[in-house]
Length: 150
Image (cartoon, rainbow, N blue to C red; front, side, top):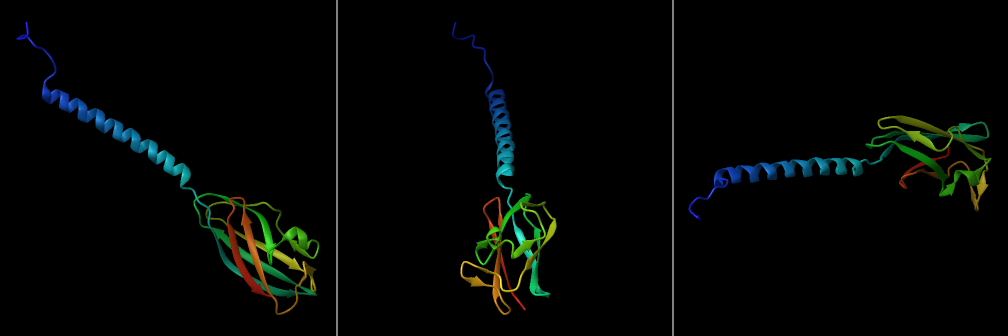
């Protein structure tokens, strides 16, 4: 009874095990690629230029930037000397409505109009003062630049 054994030969067994192992490895690799792609999107704003120019009794500050990241970003707030733009209102006005969406590879320009002698929180903006401008994104990142008011 034991002499009549039938089964799969060792060569066929090895081929089947290797094929199943390769199939599982490919499935895991494709799954991980999908996960990595979902989590690897990042935002990155590069400020290309920032300068101030006189404008009657005040100044115009022009900031040009690009999104060099791999996902779109939105600028939801602008800070002047660490004070939100809304607290400077109406003395500082922005030409863009916030939040400002910036697609991948896209460039934008924001222009701030500052009235001369603007004050808030004990700060006065006047000629010769360095103004720090911070762009805050919905992703929680902050991008800084500074200009000196002429």
